[in-house]
Length: 405
Image (cartoon, rainbow, N blue to C red; front, side, top):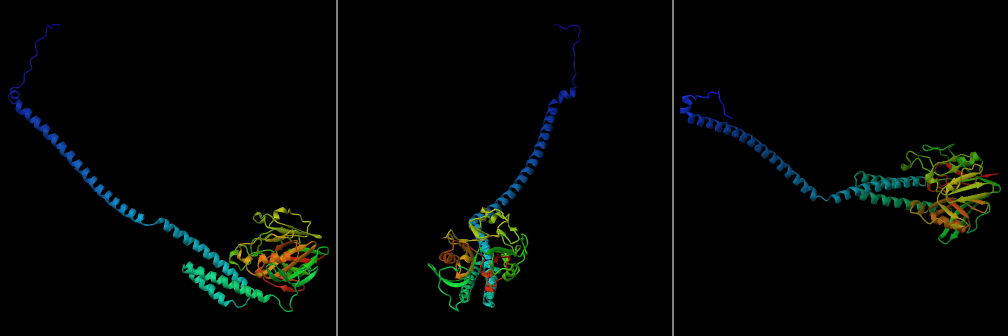
């Protein structure tokens, strides 16, 4: 399109600019370069600071890594398995030594019931405790083991000396039909002296008497056997079940208590809910019969019977020895073994002198017992027939008694 009617536009540039345009352009270029240089310098300074900080941090990191490497090297040089094994052994030594301390102390307490002067054993025990306090468990263990063996040897000697020898007891493998008999019984494992009391269930009730009227878990009352005999009008009696003597450290918090099922003469069932001991054997007496069972859980809570006594171990059942041995050192040591047994409708209580638990089972089998149950032993041993035949022993929480019908 052709434009018409418009005047041509003329722009006049000052003469000064025309003449000095090269100088002006050069100046502007120099200014731009200077500004760019300033910004570049500032950026360089900033980067320098960053680099400096990075260098500083890197040095710190390197020092930390060096420390960690030293610690790691030290850790690698340690045998952690050996350290852990040493700690575990130390814990085991403490536990084992503590158990031995308690065991020896309780043996010492039992010995004190048989012998007045135990000073040499007391001194040895104090010496062993001193080694324990110094954490010298190896020496303490050796001293305690030696002490335990010496106490057992002393108990064996005392038990042997307590066996009546005057007048000499007759040799007989036949159980008496009634009353008390002291006789030597010859078995396939040796000859043993026994004090045994027989009663006919046709004219005798077998009852259990307790110092407590109801279940008791701690600080339970105890009585001597003679008191049980007297207050029940019994003509014979014997110590009852295992229990926790007040003087035993392991019995703290449950002194005088017993754990197994028992129905006393007042028809109260003790420990009826104690399922832990429901597999313990028991014997039940009523009228003219006795029933021995291998587990007390096999019996209900019938109060129509005369007595129920759960105890262990069962020695003879159905005329056969069923006690197969034990890892219990008290069962394997020589001592007085008390029992309750039957042959037909004759019931027996007694003490087998200076015998192990296994020896006792053989004696009762030899006498023709159809069933026999072990009772408490050691410092609790007591047998009564017109007076103490054995004992009196320590006070006890329950007793088994023969009462005329």
